[in-house]
Amino acid sequence: MTMFWTIWISVITLGTILGCYLLMRWTLANKTGVEEGESMGHEFDGIVEINNQLPRWWTILFYLTMVWGVLYLVLYPGLGGFKGVLGWESANLHVLSLEESEQALREDIEQGRLNEYASQIKLAEDLFDPIFAEYAKTPVELLAQNDEALQVGKRLFLQNCAQCHGSDARGQRGGFPNLTDNDWLYGGSGDKIKETLIKGRIGAMPGWLASFGETGVDEVVAYTLSLSGRDVDSALAAAGKVRFAACAACHGMDGKGNQLLGAPNLTDNIWLYGGSQRAVTETLYYGRNGVMPAFDKTLGEDKVHVVAAYVYSLSQE
Image 1 (cartoon, one colour):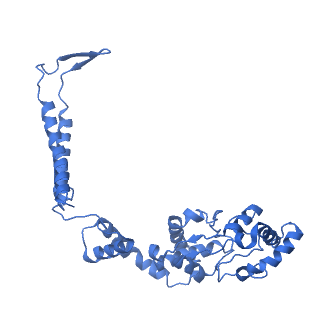
Image 2 (cartoon, one colour):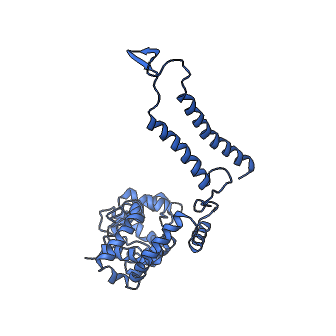
């Protein structure tokens, strides 16, 4: 901060406190010539103004707030470049990126700086990291049978995943899959769920309007819907089956998908973006590129392990 702003902030802050003090002194002094308790000569709607002092407790309270304001400015930063007697400063005050923020946090913890956020993070790590490390020693499938671990995983899920998948984990239309039905794009084993949480996923369904044209898209839509037993125009479906060869690279010739690529099964009538003719047509027109964020840095691998166990448990009988 430049010297100009340091002076500007200091003058405004200290001037405000001084102004409050002078205003108090002025209002406490009787400059009206009217005795205390007597009428000031003002009346409105039957209400007469009386020359009364502020209650003593109220006056003392005002003075205390001024003293506290000055004391706070002495102890903590608030006057421009002055850092305060305690040398306290806000966490990550000078960082410009997430990487710098994480580095600053680790340095604060290691050096024991007077920093509330760093202190709370260190306290949480000391208390809970050993517990998560112990959970991480158990395979996801076995940990999913530990009721205590599932309760912890559920709380982490509600804090980090429910915004998209819902508090009941049943997802919602628009690219947020149901995690309770055992239908998985990338695989539903413990390791695969954990891999998804750590690395995230990025959908890569291209749009086909330019390649197929509107008529071609209608044909492929008809054939795609027929794979799940829907009633469609047989002529369109037959023509669409020929064009579907371009889709088979990901979804397979039988349309049952490929978990290595995250290509969904088109035969089970479970749809991520909606299974109506209009919704499937929109998918083929424009493609789908949903993003599942990575949680490796947000939660860390040990916490991800517990969340994976909770998610795995949701689709088990």
